[in-house]
Image 1 (cartoon, rainbow, N blue to C red):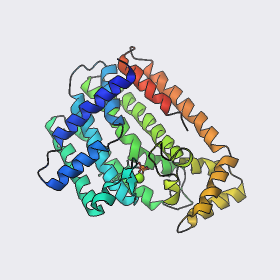
Image 2: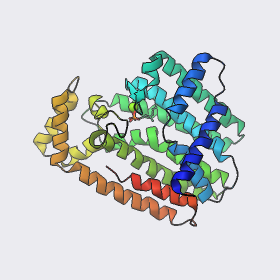
Image 3: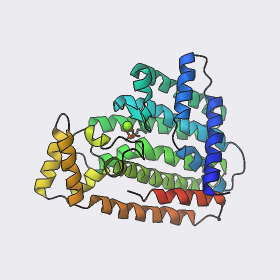
Length: 319
Ligand code: FPP
Ligand code: MG
């Protein structure tokens, strides 16, 4: 099967599982469930989990449960995240908060998370329970750290890495490690799988940060310069600060110090990024990160699922 065919099939399978797991008897929850699943993303985490399971030789069906649990944790965190970020849209359509109200978004997020944990408990695996509850802790901590450092010029790459670990990489690490658990690989390989997922998730987040400055718009369904508007120092800006001369550094910080950033500020930050060739620099960096990830996959037999993962990796080099 072609990579795209396999991916579409998996998305349908995971969506069906999500419908089963989110059992609701409130009309409002049913509406939000439909809304979230239908407007719902690329299912990257469950698809990655499935592929890793097959790459590692696991032939069973539990991947569908684990993948759906990962997606539920992710979906719940996004409902909350859009409230925190005051985001009006998600994936090009109104966010749950702006459509149903922020209070509803928070409570519905709690409900999705509860459905995920309930289902996780039913898998009867203390190891999987440990892994995914740790992810939920990481998500919450990183969002608090990010908030604490908003518009703070003292932010450095250690703080940034901590945020990225918690908000994105931790769940990627978990789905790869969980694949190893289902495939019953030796303990030392579980650690390697976790590290692989963490590296992949960090790259995914850095690329997402780059898209915010260089590619957002109709095609991606993302609001351009959203992180900049929110006063968040993200990856392109941290790289800019490393390269910029004293004056440009000062100018960059002065933009983030403002209560709000206007259209002129947007022109200024984009021209600064351009002056120091940050887009090209990131593109090269991401390419080399992908090379490293591919090297890890070379250690496993050729499979259709391996081809799908490699195909997805190529997208991570696009900035
Ligand atoms: C998206 O980042 C943010 C997350 C994936 C994590 C959000 C986590 C919380 C709000 C903590 C609560 C957690 C749970 C499990 C309920 P982003 O804002 O950079 O990306 P975006 O552009 O997609 O919004
Ligand atoms: Mg957000």
